Image (spheres, rainbow, N blue to C red):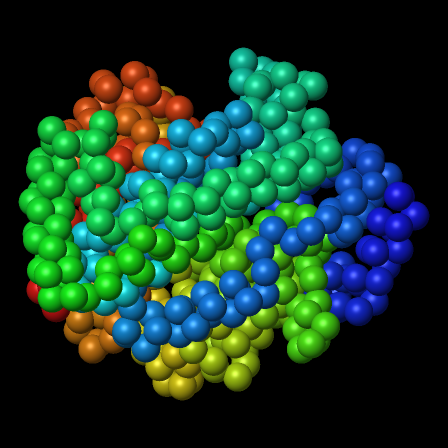
Amino acid sequence: MKDRARASTRESEAENPAAASWRAFPARQQPDWPDPHALRAVTEGLAAAPPLVFAAECDQLRRRMAAVARGEAILLQGGDCAETFERTTADAIRGKLQTLLQMAVVLTHATALPVVKVGRMAGQYAKPRSSAVEERAGVVLPSYRGDAVNGLEFTEEARVPDPRRLRTMYEASARTLNLVRALTTGGFADLRQVHAWNEGFVAASGAGERYEQLADEIGRSLGFMRACGVDTRELATAEFFVGHEGLLLDYEAALTRTEPDTGRAYATSGHFLWIGERTRDLDGAHVEYFSRVANPIAVKLGPTASPDTVVSLLDRLDPDREPGRLTFVVRAGAERVRDLLPTLVEKANAEGAQVAWVSDPMHGNTTTAPSGHKTRRFDTVLDEVRGFVEVHQELGTHPGGIHVELTGDDVTECVGGGNAVLEEDLPHRYETACDPRLNHTQSLDLAFLLAEMYRGR
């Protein structure tokens, strides 16, 4: 079995340069794996494992993202900051899916545009860190880099990078995808069940009440359609994709597959992968790897991004300027987005690129509460989204959507929102493994407010 896996790895890298070419480039934010032989054994096994997603699904998403780039659709992407193995449960997955479906209904109803739904799930188990080490009470240990690498517990044993966790990530991602596929095709995502999605969550909140009114309106419209003889059975399923930051290149390379009919390489760990703010070096391994796979991909652009950055990334990752290939996710911060974004969009337009522009209003707006908890203020998150939409409105371009960290649970991690979470509430249900997430009510609040922005364009 090991010989077959080893042969599979060699064949994969020989047939597909994407699985190997990045190794000649500097790779940032990679774990310091203590046992290279154990890493090789795991990646050889993954190279022989079935793909998690398929080329046809990635091509379908690429067509959907082309519609976003043309202004004919909206991207809604959301999920955990960092998935954990412990919380990869049916209830948690169902809650995130339900939240995203509700948000999509709100946006579709307001804009009359299709909403491309992408879960930040089934692979978001690794995180880049600003420091390689963490210190507590004079004890210095390696930083927690996500469950794909090491454990959250602050012990020497837990913080040692363990490549066997890559296999666990693959298995957890497969379970997540299996449940998502079952839910989105098995009736759970049926648009005729819009009322049921609100049960047990925010029905008593302001956002919940607005959602119930919207559900009533949709129900009446569906009733009218059925009375007119329109077949509404197609509404019983939902198209849903998954994505994550393509951070751990050993894992991504092991799951790279080449389509025999086309010779095109795909990252089969997820449909929609992105390069993070800390790893978008033009001469780095991440840009090299993603330049060679056919998936629709994204790059995060923080406050240090310049128009020259945009041009260079376009030339490396989207040289043919194909709509749907490349998405820029802007995480400038509420105070900077109105100044930074116009120059980036104008430069991309001057290059003849038709990329999708998406707002990440979370990562540039993290603060620390007096209690020591990292948090984000809902009003600040909303202000970055508003600035993002305003810029596009002034330029006559399309605000392509949002990328947010959220959960379907009633956590207390971000401050504010309709049912306001106060700073003193943060310790009550602060459950994230890394950065704070919007809870279900706050997510639905954001969807309604974003819908008003689109409607006012």
